[in-house]
Image (cartoon, rainbow, N blue to C red; front, top):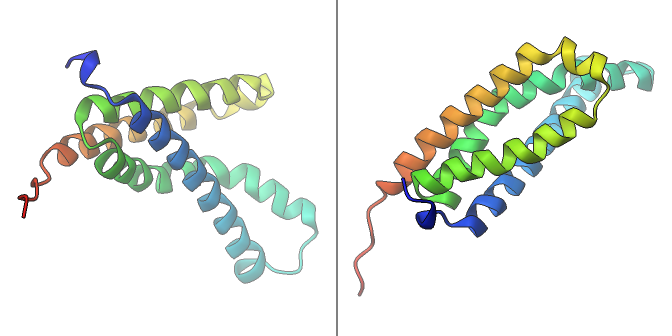
Length: 137
């Protein structure tokens, strides 16, 4: 893998799109929980549920989100892995800014989340390279 073959714009753009998509997935999940599954509770219940469910939503929604970003935005294995690297730096920085007590409590979830996203970027990048090139008309 050659660093010169990485499309950095696509890696950064894909990482940002994937991060935004994960935030949207978390918000949608809390909306479903608050309006459909457990309506009529105080706002603190929904805030606590958002904190508890956030890592799980990241794991479950993260795989297809990062696969899609690596396949259709990165379009290559080197750029897909760079996309994961950019995300890791951004998300890792946010995680370090969190309360240390909270970060330690969810460390195993963080490791699982990053592992599934790395696998998704790897597979998406590999599959993105296999897309047939359309013939010029």
